[in-house]
Image (cartoon, rainbow, N blue to C red; front, side, top):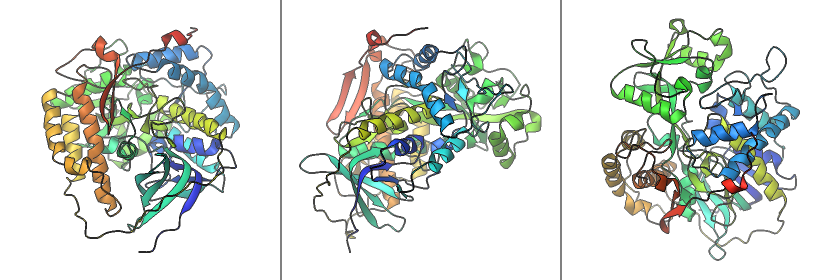
Length: 535
């Protein structure tokens, strides 16, 4: 087979969400940039985001208040300095977007129309187009990209190219739709590929999001951390045992209540903030209702002009035959956000030279054990810009030295017998979902271990189909999640262990780090002494 022409870049950005596009927009004009994505540039969680951007821009609000809410929601398991940098940078990021032409929603007085969401102590959620914030931001970021940036869609990135001598990441391998292999080389490779929602049968995520970035990094030798902390969003539209999309937390921020089939409030007496309690608390309550075969609804009767205020949710309900005349929406919790991911430093550098990770793919420490609502878009903007600033300071012009390797396909290799995706998703939801036990995690571990021959093997992936590679990656990430969830013998934030129902101070000090070298219980770095809080 004829070899594909080698393409060279300064920066290869894998992914097309808010972190990826923020980075691409802020990189120096001298950079040769490639944005390469698995599906289309609009098929990502950022585009789906309804809630908005959390930022302390209100007259009565302060970064210190935003910081305190973030720490409390995430059960005090954060990198405190990173949290402080994030919340302090929030208002600046909003101002930058305004100056670049993005129109945020305004109130009757012409000021930013700030919304309330769960676990926030202030109205600080900035929106665009009501409940279509992600779409508006992503269209804006896409429209402001420089024309000379290469964007390649519908490519499945299946391997990071590590130089055999320097051990630096120097490029990627990808498959196009017809199965042909391609290679791209660059000075820096940035993984911005989203989370792991596609590993669970009930999820708010885009179908393309299945943990690929984490699998790529792990297989290349990078450190992966805190994979047990997976947030399940309390309110997904739920019909005929299937979910049909996200019902934004902003709906509860406007006063909607969670009720059972008899109309009784579910969160009354369960938490001081009731329906606006942190997500892990609300999700757990709703899961237990569903487990008891009880229906759960979001009562929207108190929200005036609902259709006008939430046009995206209204359209979604209408498309799925849910009449809003009854003023209640059937909901269920589903996989939403990964707090763990690829271990990175403050600029997104991984444990592999030349490899960076930003957005949900990375574990920056800003979300702790449970992400505060609407901090995700803020994180993407913050770290996309921060990494751009870091890379702009070290523009490298010399060419990457490319080792010889063959991308041709050997059709004689054995194709692994891997499980169906739906089988894996069902098992992950049943055994590693909202509430976990050692015995159920052990069942999942034993099932996953049947595929260790393929997960632990460093065989070439060049010859496998995209479908086989996707299932292999999903199994790899499922194993990382299950191992970490089994090891953490406590309940903290989004990690709920029925057999260890309380927080354990000893575990508050520990990160679970996994890599090809093994598993490390790494002591958490406390940085309170460096953080000044001026409330």
